[in-house]
Image 1 (cartoon, helix red, strand yellow):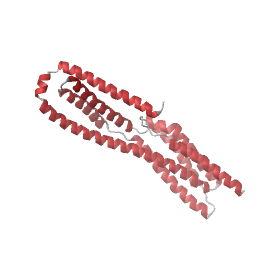
Image 2: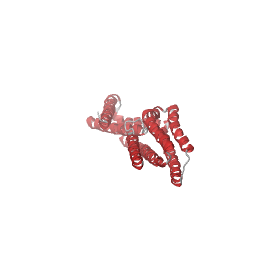
Image 3: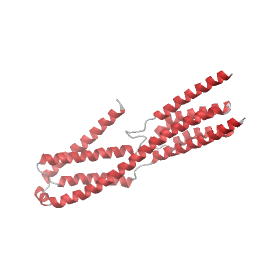
Image 4: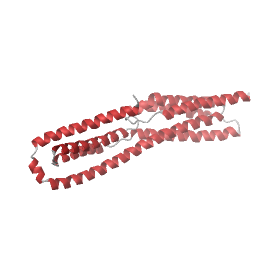
Length: 271
């Protein structure tokens, strides 16, 4: 089943379930609550609901803005890391053969470790595995450090390799930092408590006929559930339903292979 379809099915089930439960709760509430007393206080309740609703709407908008920015930044970190890997792999082709092969092999091993181990480790917040994957980049750094350029061209390329390696480590750090960012627990409590308050408040607004009240309650509950689903998912861009695709890293591996074949072909012609 395509990912978009799985997300749609899950979202529909959650929104429909919350709307149904809220509507059933309203039916029970109308059977037990003193409706005449609530009707007499409808003006005051309307002002209260307008105030609370405005505050909660601002809160939801703020949180959605924050988590969407975090999600978008995570996508940018992934794309930039992939580009940095490709640039470093390609630039290293101009170094002495032994160093070149060691750097390029280390980069391939790093990307494979990110895909095979680190992605899942970010979901689990497994810092030991993340550190272990990072050690593969340390080996690349050691290969760069041991390099001895033999001519002016290689000295220039060596400086570029150092610069691009630093760019790679910086963007890796940014990606890992974005994987650890979460909405604080007090804010989550406020979001869920606010949702319950909003749904409970619409219960007290006695709307006639009753079926209109049920529809209004179900619609409001469904809308809140949809937004909460979005916030919950985007808050973790590496393990939520909208988790970032790993395609940039697969493209990096494909680019590594293309660069290697091109360099080999050039060397054969030169020989």
